[in-house]
Amino acid sequence: MSYLEVLEKARDLYLAHIPFCSATIVEGQGSIPQILGAKALFTEEGLVCGTVGGGHLEKQCEEMCREMLSGRQQSRTQLVKLNLQRDLAMTCGGEVTVFLECQGSVSDWTIAIFGAGHVAQALCRLLVSLDCRILVFDTRSDWLAALPASPRLTSIRISDMADGAKSVPTGADIVIMTIGHAEDARILKSLAMQEMNFPYIGVIGSRAKSLSLRKMLNKDGVPESFVSDIICPIGEKIGNNTPAEIALGIASQLLKRRRSES
Image (cartoon, rainbow, N blue to C red; front, side, top):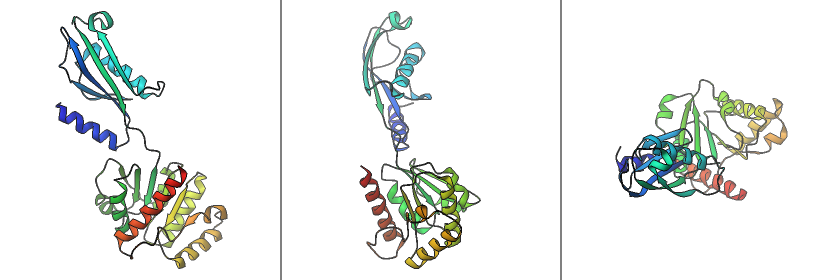
C-alpha cells in the first residue's frame, strides 16, 4: 500500500469519526524491517492499513496504539525507541524510533433524519460538512441512493418509518420530513415510547399542521411534556420555501441549538 493510500485511509477514518492511531518510523539504525517514513494505521480492532515492517515490531506498535486509543493514557502522542533484538527478540540487530499519534474522535453529535425527500437532500449536503454523524431513514431506496456520499452519513432503508425510532441513539437531534401528518405522528409516538433524551425534535410543516399534529398526539395519549418540546414549523425563516432555503434555516437552527449546549 502506497503512502498516498495510507493518507487517504486516514482521511476516511477521520471523516467517519473512527478513532485511529498512526505509527511512523522516524529514525533507524542498523538493520531494520522497513524504510524511514514507513507508516501504519491502527484502530481498536487492530491494523487497518500500511506497515512498519510486520512481525514483532508491528505487533508491539499495535499493542501500544490500542492502549493509547483505550483512553487509559492521557497522552495522544508517544515517541518510542526500540532495540529490535533486545526488546522484541527479532533477528534484526538495529534500532528504530517510532512516533505514535492518536487522531480522530467519535462525534457526540448525531442527527437522525426521517425522510429523504427534496429538503432532506439539500439539508444533508450542508450537514456532511459539519462535525456530526447523520442517519437518514426512508422506505424509498431511490431517494436514499440520491443522498450525498459521505462517511459521515448512513442511509437506512426501512419498511416502516416508525420502526426507525428504535434505532436512534439517545441524545440525537431529530428532524422529521416525511410525506404527511399521519406518518409524522407515528414516528413521534414511537420516539416518545423510547423514553430517551432527544434535545431537538423538529417537524417540517406549517403552523396549521403544528396545531393539528399536536392535537393528534394529545388525543393518542402522548405526554404533554414531549409534545410541547416539538418544534414545528422546523427551522428559522431566513428565505423562501425552496428546498435549499428551508434546509439553510434548519441547519441554522440545529447549529444554534448545538452551540447553546457548549
